[in-house]
Image (cartoon, rainbow, N blue to C red; front, side, top):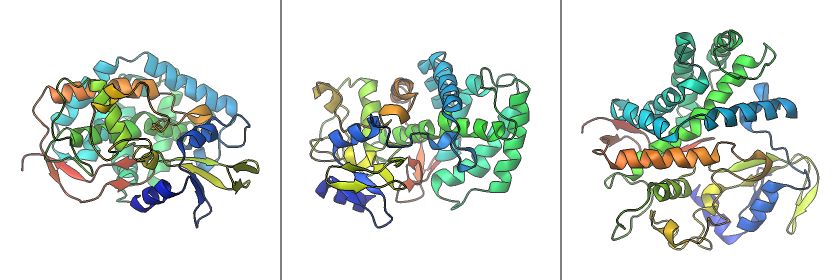
Length: 349
């Protein structure tokens, strides 16, 4: 990531050796993601069972379901539930955050009246998603995933998940587990980063101001956490039609990449870009173009507004209680499809 960041600072658009086209100019990146010409495929990885994109009406129905679920949730309740669960846990930080966020979303995920579904999701988080999130498993356990997807599919068919779209039985369990990652994955990574960032002795990969501004709004803490450590650290889009981005020819079959991590630390857009300074948001007239943790356009995160609100509530809850005790086990962040902190153990030193 460091090499990618350095290259992004030097070059606004470039092609990697693997053939991806990387866009590191904020205005250009937004134009690319908005994609008024329909040149890109915006179906997120969540809605690609068997790596095949679902039809647009099905994707739209799933996105509506996610949006409806989040609209019915109280961000403060979700944050309080997740923070209390992590604070009461001992062991791996990533696993604790995954389970805490899943439990905080128990209503939309159907746990409240279906204990078997809760157990299925817990096993999925432990034995499949945790390894993918941390990089401990290079490849997912396909057999375990298919077994859990079949169990989840039976629960979904019984009406356990309120409002879940009616899907073909061959894919409904897999799509449900992918929906779990949509609700849980990025939010758990963001919560883990926030817990690390609020510990003065465990701040990861950045610096603090010499003097911390008093009474910083929790929303600004959330925004600064998402700026420095965006769980969705890059936004990837398959190219459907030949076109040009600036002077770069982009061909059908290429993959276009907008590296949110690099843009959100780019010195052109952010004074003292590597400084963890939540107070900077009070000095900004509006959110900068280079702030893209949720992307924009047709493939933007449907839960972006809720994510900021619940993470801000989590920052308030964490600041009002003693720091969660952490023991750091690795030196570098976990960089997979999700960007998450170095591995930590929750517990007394």
